[in-house]
Length: 200
Image (cartoon, rainbow, N blue to C red; front, side, top):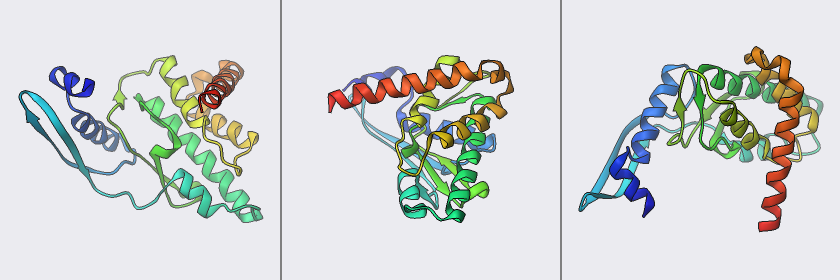
C-alpha cells in the first residue's frame, strides 16, 4: 500500500530501475539492458508495474560459487577465485568512484559471467540505484557491508581483504583511512550478523 501511495509523488520502481540501468550502461557497467517499463493504474493509484530487460547470461553469486568452486579447491580453482574476488573489488570500487550507489548491493543482486580476472559483473535490481557526483561515506559503507555480509565457505578473511584492497585502489583518497575503513566494515558486518541471528 505504501509503495502505491509513494507512486503518486515519485516514479514507480520499474521506471527508476529502467533509468538507473540506462545510466549504468552509459558509464560502462554491466546490467541487463532495460527495454521497456509499464504501469497499470486504478483510481490514480498504480496496481502493478513491470520492467522488461534482456537476460544476463550468467549465474548469481551464490550459485556461481557453489558450482564453480566446490570444496576442496584445486590450485587452479584457488587462483581463479582470488583473481575473481580482486576483479570484483576493482569493479565495485569503480562503481563508487564513478558516483553510483546501489540501494541493496547484496551478492544475490550480482550476476557473474566468465571467470577469474576476465569475469563480468552484472548488477540487477536497480530501482534504488542512484547516480551522483560523489557518494556520501554512509552510503559507501552501507554497500560494502552489504557485500561483506555474504558467507561462503570458499571465502576467507584474506579474500575479504583482497576485495577491499582492490576497491581502495580504485578510490585512492581512501588510502589514508584504510585501516579505519576495514575495521568499520568488519564491525558493522558482525553486528548485522548478530542481530540477524537473534531475530531468526
